[in-house]
Image 1 (cartoon, rainbow, N blue to C red):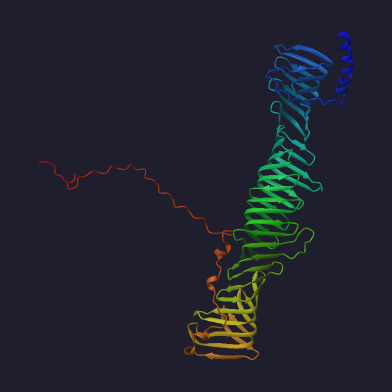
Image 2: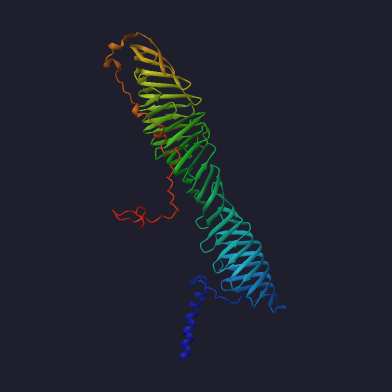
Length: 568
């Protein structure tokens, strides 16, 4: 009866056991982590080899020759080849032809010849070496692999490929645990994005994460792309997002401009970059340099914005240099596909101008670099040697790098100080000033013209004052001194002798001498173009090497030793 019950129970359990063994049955346990191989564990020759030959050398070294369908195993590592020498006492293997090392079913290394040390758990592959794991493929003439640390090293040319990139270098190190590669000497990274746009990176030391696809570098690095070239000495480059984060001597170089800074983040996909610390933008076409503390660059829009630390723009033309500063500088340049965009520079607020013979200030400024015209808006003031000009708005027109004309619009007022510190004045609706050789040659007052002009004798004595009103007026200068006044359109003028000149007669309505607001070179250039020599630290006083003599002790009131006479 008990045997019958056992038989019935077995019949009931057989279907369940069969179902559990099928692929769709109960879940099987996943692969268990392999235990570390104990030091000195012998390498095991697997069954199936074609021929075994045992040899003992005259030195007493035992060698096992294995021919055909060779397979060895040690822990989680398998070694396959066509033939091999197994050094049993040394626990080493020398493998030949179609050599293949497989570790934990994830890393596979193939080559023409291999050396395996079972005690050290190291493999050296020679000839047409190919290393593969799920994320990359590496080819190199020679490869050393540490199976305990799971690290690979090569000292000859290596070529790595993954779905997005290829990498070449003379030396390399790969950690299969962290999936991080370190490349050295003549490193060349080629990245091709989904739009088939190619980017080349060259340097001497590069760390590449095969999971994140980010390349890290520390040393001079150049990245060449279709939209321009990048240079830096430290940072990283994401080969997937094509975002560069440069942290030392960073530069973007395009056919039209050069943008650099202490740190630069640039997105090639969006054609957008941000720079910080000693930011410099150089326009190659018109020799203009912009400097500031921070910058933002929209390559697709052709715009660059500098701010922080009072950014400054420098325009060099021949021997003349023009500086302009403001809280913010905005440069508009040509963008991809639109080469004929007018190049304009905007400076705001608190714009300042400095040139050897011209200074100015206003709240906002526009510089048309194509026509060399500077537009000044909102309370503009200009100083040219001893002449001050104000109006509601102004224009400075340049020719061959020098001031050619100044146009003053609405409520225009010009003041010229003579050698005796008197103030010649002219005002009107609009004023045109013409220059010759960098100096004022003529001033035309157009509409509601008024003037005050002092007559001098030999630049030393005031002989009187001319005061006039007319529709238009022309004043001619020589060496920045007023020489002649011509009034047209119902002129009304009178001459006042020196003894009859009264203080109210010396000022036109709206007069305001603002020379204390005149910007200096140092105020405009600030720290951005600080050309002052660095301060030298005072030299430390050298300590005397001579030993100090002990001070002579004397008793107050007692004669010194030299004054005492010896006893008779």
